[in-house]
Amino acid sequence: MSGLLEADVLVAGGGMAGAIAALAARRAGRAVALVRRSPGATALSSGAVSVAPDLGALAGEPLASRRPPLEAAARLAAARPDHPYAVVGTARLGEALAFACEELAAALAPFDDRRRFLATLYGSAVGAGLCQRANVAGDLLSVRGLLAVAGFAGHAGFDARLVAGGLGRYVARGGPEPRAVEVALPAGLGALARPHELAGALDAPGAAEALGDALRAALPAGARAALLPPVLGLDPGARAVERVAARAGVPVAETLSDVPSVPGLRLWRALEARLAAAGVRVVQGELAAAPAPGEPVRAGDAMIQAPVWILATGRFVGGGIARRGVLAEPALRLAVQAAEGREAGVHLAVRPAASLTSRDRRRPQPLLSAGLRVDHALRPLDERGRPVHPGLHAAGAVLGGHEQATDGTGLGVAILTGYLAGLAAAEGR
Amino acid sequence: MARPGALAYLAWRALVAHPLKRLFKWRGTGLDRFRAAYVAEGLAPAEPARRAAAEAASACISCGLCETGCDLATATPVVRALGLHAAFRLYSRTTMDLALAGDALERCAGCAGCEALCPTRVPIARVLAALRGGGVGPGPGGRPG
Image (tube, rainbow over all chains, first blue to last red):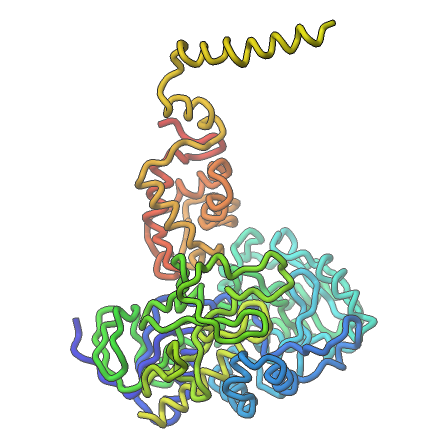
């Protein structure tokens, strides 16, 4: 065991919220230690970073008439008082998103408050507030003319005709005309390779260039951009997309991914690389029986002491909220709360978790929005609505009030609350 | 009339013949009878160790992050393409389908590179050991013993 590691801020959780919190506190000059056990739900990201859906959107309206992310987030906050956007306010959301894009510039495209419509593996379009660099050229509103959807010969994980057929439905709403083509994979790239293997092979010198040449040969006349399977490089620094595009002669993008997700792994790598470069002390392990901020706590092989803690442990995937018959927050045994219907702040710690689901899938699922309740400074509240500890903050999916996996605000909430929690922790040292 | 005769025969079967048969014909222990009825359908009674492994495996969310730490180098390309986590997906559905993942299980080198990548803390090595010890072998139908 090493000696006592002292820091100004201790962050628990290495997903998007934890990483942004650590980077924000680090930029404010604080010594930051980050404890994480394994990749969390952020590594399952499709490539799109959903900030806020446009709640007032009508089916079939032109894509360009969807509200931009910041305005949609402000409206969502006004409509749902227990959503984290409403609790902390969306005034600094643009600043937080710009911060995230700057810190993670290796993977994420710059923020410009424009909604980008990105194709999924199944030919639908997702309106994302932020996206990876690999997705930018595939924005349906930015392609004027023919969009080539290129599948790899013999590669079963991507059906170019399915994607092109699905995207055809968006032509009337301002999307480009899609056309499916087949590209022969260059020698050395096996069609049966798993997605992360294909992506890793494309990072190697020459491989992305060879794919670009093959794509150029397969492109139909008049193609203005090409959409490829989400396997264009694992290493954010290898710039595989740009290298394919340079040889193909048209802008190239990948579709969003399903799990196992290469874009998710790429985002996770970018987070890890940025944390290391920014001088955040990353500790592998998990908080064991954490007492309270200010006291030494064991994490993996290390003992860490910090006056301010940020809890960014995620929800069910990350383990920040556990379902053991009833819902519990395992690290600090904080009160878990959720909203039911329009009623907010119901204390759920004593109710069986199974009673918190609704049979109708279209209705809100109280179980899926369960989490910690916090005040405007992101301090977790106890059963009686008082902050548990002045030096304890929480950020990301561990916060309740939103269905982070499905309501289209997951990573947006992680970035905003991570950023604000990082700043609050840096001030409150 | 055939109907009263038929009803009388059914009553005889239900009230006399069948209860007497249940009383006097030895059909093995409860476990024997369970096995006779269910083992053919892949529903063998679980030993405690295997049941514990199944509970641990139920935390799997099929995200595939473990795949990135799994080489499966000696498997055929088709088996590698499906990956070892296919075993978990199949396992979560039915134990019958698990036999289809037998080839992948067989090729697992036991490097444990997968385990640190699991976001939901599935003890992958322990589950795989239990699956391999539980008669799941190459090809459909499992392995004898």
